[in-house]
Length: 470
Image 1: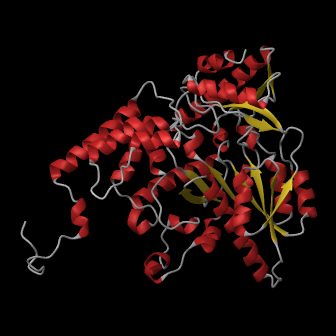
Image 2: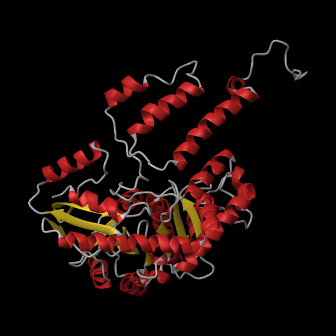
Image 3: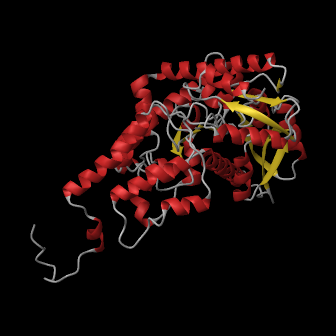
């Protein structure tokens, strides 16, 4: 290759040239990385692993960021042998804390394709094929949840961004309604949610500088419309949105969405359903009835990286009327005119983001490969397994089941144990590489919980963990 005739003979190399690898070197690097990815994706016995102390990581990993680099082989070695073992595998069958992940092999593999293809998923102009596929998934989900044909949305990073984006759209609708009616804007806006709602709702309210009004859940931990009505009446701010939870993170409780929807409608408030963890269970025939009222939502979220077997990070945010979201989120700038002046479907106009990865594609590929019925069976299986382990906990005198699980979270306690006992037991389980089950709390008391997501979490795995509590 000859130098450009426009370049001076002794011109220094462009900075980017320093990172341009010869074809054979680049091929070796890619092969090495993909070989590790292949082994990890196909591993039968996924390692549980454990966190490491900062001092140990500094000693073992050393300084990998240097002026001259350390090379691909050494960098890969540091990751494989030092960094990766210091990360707990959320897809391990005995990872039962928080909400696990359980991506299918199809979704994992296609996540690599998404990165390797440099697909930009922010606009139709730049990524129409990807956006088309994502929209097919969103339309399927919207139909499953009973939303009208015009419903649509976008895949965002996670439930926190999904909830924030939905509430921003809700407030914008309230503002526009007030302007159209010639009304004075209220001094304060307010959101009503359950006292058991996810912490991201409080975070969204803080970011938006609106009041958060907590409605008291009933003795079962379930929010009902009557409590929402009382909260609205007691609010000193103008309530523009009500949030119902379709599967709380800690106990897996589904609110009485139908009665909440009726109250929200009577007060002209936006109904948002936070179904990050639990709304996927609407696909299972045995639990579908728990979600009556979801079809009345103005917006909802469900996280495919939780119970829809996709890799991190993906939250499906769906609006009943996407035009409201467009009015709230479309960014204006001269360089964006070519996008915003068109009628194309641009996902970045539907949430608090601009640049975005086509993070819905791994789910699209997995659904296309396996079919939706496989998903229904896998979710139904987790619900049934939760019921069986709840029955087993009832049979064991040293254990006490807090409540019959709505979905796949099983909460219980070990009689006579203190918070320190729970923590010591949890630490031993992880140290022995048997399981990752951290203590939680409910009503001020320490408890244990199993969050069952993975089809690889068998009854035998759960029974073995219960045996360690004797």
